[in-house]
Amino acid sequence: MSEQNSKIATVFDSDEQHVGEVYAKALIAAAEKDGQVDTVVDQLESLVVDVLNRNPKLDVVLSNPKMPLESKWELLEKVFGGSMNGTLLTFLKVIGRRNRFHALRAIQNCASRMRDEMAGRIQVEVTVPEAMDASRESALITKLASYFKKDVRLTTKIDPQIIGGLVVRVGDTVFDGSIDGQLRMLRKTVSARSEHALRSAADALVQAN
Image (cartoon, rainbow, N blue to C red; front, side, top):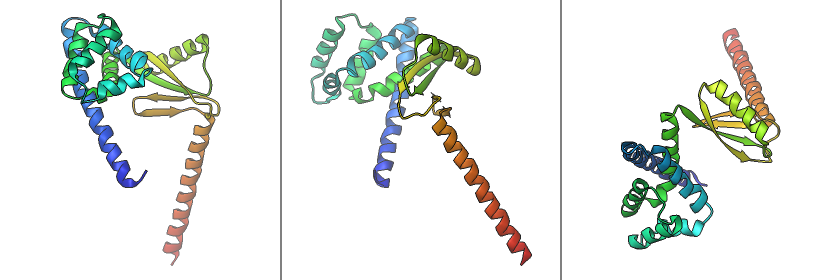
């Protein structure tokens, strides 16, 4: 990707994140009035993870600004069989009218994070080289909860290229406990020490002259 394209992509990502935060706050506020925060956020997560992620064509249709809104509502009613929470359905109609369906994932991510913050939880994403069994996952959750002093909602990703250990992400912060990560850190440390040594030697030469 060229530098110009990279800047454009960053602007788009930043804009979508901003949209996600604004609409997520509005959704959480509306759901709080009826005491339905967990229900609304759970159904929004289900819409994204269980429906749209598994049915890309449906995602394209809902994000298409040329498709009549009435057709989108009929489609949602058909998919959820009329069981969708009223607050969430109204919210989806609002973002549909404003052509914001493309930002639905950003909205869902922000809403899930806000809900967890309200409940004193944090979202932790762990990347491991292979799937963990239930006992190992439970032990990891307990360890992370002890470390962060909060309840942990864990999601896992599999990346066979990771050599040993795991990579933990909390928001924008990454804790890399893999062997690869440790080696990268070691290389940075050695490089920094070498650079410091070279600068010290140069300073000594300047002072000597």
